[in-house]
Length: 98
Image 1 (tube, helix red, strand yellow):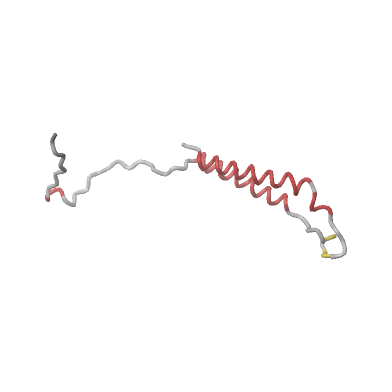
Image 2 (tube, helix red, strand yellow):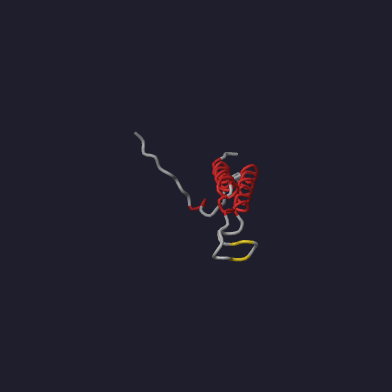
């Protein structure tokens, strides 16, 4: 069994050896495209969720009235679905290899 040794010489100290630089950035152009698509889904989901609150009628707060618009299909089902789809697309964009 031979002993493995690394030999260093004083004359080699400080000399730069050229190492080929390869692109080590993980995300490619497709990753960013998918991220933008996911972000668009999330923004659209939050925009669909917007609207008057429960006590707002014709743009004015009225504590004696009730607005059933807060329970619309758009605000309860569709908007959260868009947001969840957006987050799933974001996870896919991060995990996708070049």
